[in-house]
Amino acid sequence: MYKRLIHTALDVSNIHENLTEGKYKSFEEFKADAQMIVHNTAILYGVHSDQAEIARLLFSDTCHELNELLLCKNCFYLSNARPENWFCYPCTPSHDLVWAKMKGFGYWPAKVLQREDNQVDVRFFGHQHQRAWIPSENIQDIKVSIQQLQVKRSNGWKKACEELEVYQRFLREGRFWKTKMEDSPQPHQQNQSQRQQQEEEEEEEEEGEKEKEASGRTQRPERTDEAESSISSTSNEQIRHMKGSQEPKAKKSRRSLAVEPKEEASVSLLCNKAVGFCCVIQTDSCCRFQSFQQKTG
Image: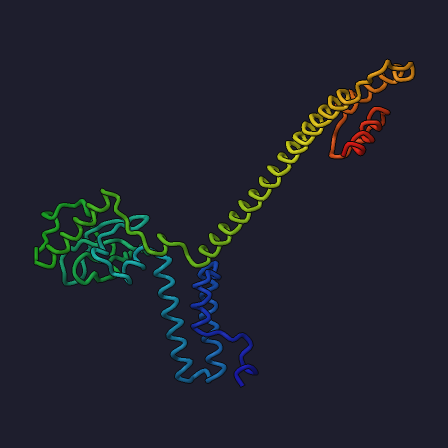
């Protein structure tokens, strides 16, 4: 029944979830969802039902709270959270301070929240922090001396002036209240920061792997150089051993004398071009040396 009547299912828990995840980009989006609840309730229970009336009251309170939030977010938070000396913390931007006179009362220190035509919306310093619309002719600047106002100094008035002095001291010292929402990141901001941290960690890991690969590549030529030096040293030792072991007892023939320059050239060429672990010796002397090793081995 509910699915057949309601096109867009929405309740207070959905709105709270959207707020937690930071899905609302403007007050109008939030207000539209609150109005959707009224619409769904009227369709499901009837326009004149008690449930629809409750939904309309909820929507009216929502609109009022949104207007208060738009008027001053600092006042909205402090008036609901009520920390110690909450009314003494200056807002951003700070409110004008005035002496305001209600009908039947004397001038009282107050903050100006907004002005419309000849009316001023003020909130009074003191115990109850009452709020009222005061005509402009009953508003005086806070710099006006108390003697000119002819105020009756009651205990409540004195406490209100003490709170005004604390507010002015906080304003001079630049002591502004920071909400928890301002100090700590919102859930969607936390998710973004976590994603950024993960991306940074992944980039660091990739850079570390690249450095390892680069270091491995730089180490390989050193090993080949060591291998080349060892090959050249072993080839030199073999050549010296070959020369010492193959010294002829008899006189060399013309044939052997003709081969010696080629042997020295091939040995020098081998020493200069020895790269890798396998070498091919193409001289007659090397062939004789290999046969000599097989016989003596």
